[in-house]
Image 1 (tube, rainbow, N blue to C red):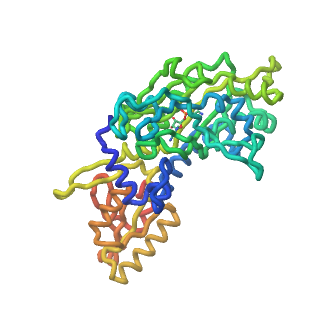
Image 2: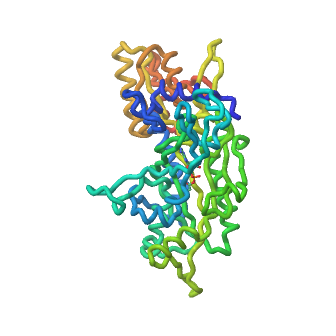
Image 3: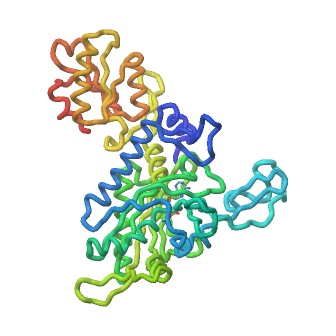
Length: 433
Ligand code: GAP
């Protein structure tokens, strides 16, 4: 378990504009979260890094962005209508509902009465809706509980448009929805969240080799997020606990503040999905090898990443407390490529026009270069440093009276708190952003 306290992360995330409770002004909506200005920047940096690593930098990967609403047949063929369930129990005294495997059912966690739970019933976690003005069985649809199916249903389209060599992958990022019985632990278990998924199509002869290559790629991803290797663990999921479609699954777990839990998953889904689509749509999902070999339905390795869990692991790894000049300091030691703000620029004194004017010019230049640059002249310089430390800004640039004489500024490093003077014309080259 991490020694970071979850309450400290939740409190910093709210105080500094990363993440707020969804619909907070109306008392909230359980399992939903809103991203503030810094949260959305951090989330985008994580998602863009993933896209860059797994789509742009590879030549065996194709991106898609499928509709969230899909034909109900998708969810029938995938098995989600029948089996995407969690065991629900209800207390006969206070009517509270829980996921059976998350509580001790001898005693109700809400009212404390014993022996009040009935037998569990299976609760389907998909959000059901109707498409169009007629509310009948034919118009039933679901908010997608995973992005994966939008990939499988486009397999043939991508093959027909690009005719890629096998193995190749299709990647998608986007919202997923699950009506979790007990959302909990901040954004870790939400009802609306984002996934980044890859379906990697392979020859069945080749699946073990490809699976191993993905294990390596996932560790590389965790490293790029700044997660300490010692906090990431592989759990070989036993057959009895695997999803209905999987022949092998490794859960990559992380030491979160609330314990060691699943960060992301890697599954060998065989030809389960394409085979089912072929059966239920009547359309061939076969791939014809370019060397003239026999056509076959490819098998699939699926690395499935949750954005919220990645973000929580990043915050947990980055959250640091130390002491500066005898005072406690909190800072986020974020990798620079993930930091929502790369540089903050300040005039030493807010009300000195001559300093502000010079600082504004420095700010404009850096913003043109790096984009994520913040103007910060609120409070005294000490307070500004503390604020920027808490949001993980790697560098603070300050324009002072000496700047007016020798055209240098101070650059303060977040991690060491050390300051050095740098010539303005050398600033862009010197900041490793
Ligand atoms: N397509 C396979 C699939 O969806 P999953 O293990 O159910 O597999 C994949 O989900 C990832 O999605 C998880 O490892 C986790 O990171 C994220 N995830 C799943 N349910 C979540 C929830 N309720 N809240 C936040 N993230 C969730």
